[in-house]
Length: 69
Image 1 (cartoon, rainbow, N blue to C red):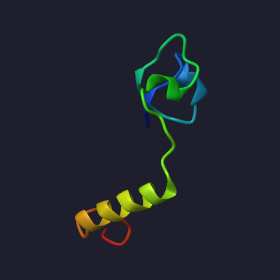
Image 2: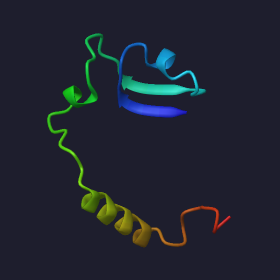
Image 3: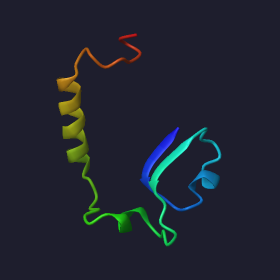
Image 4: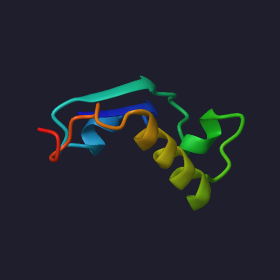
């Protein structure tokens, strides 16, 4: 399954490897994902690391994974 907030009208055809595609908006004039957002600035590596560290600390021991299964 692939889930995306916005994509081209023919997104299912473009992703034949997915058994299911969920796309909330498929504008006929789709050109780029960033055009669907008011603010689509790049996320820094530091921001991603911080969020992942926070998520890992908040759910420690509760998230199923290979080590917890």
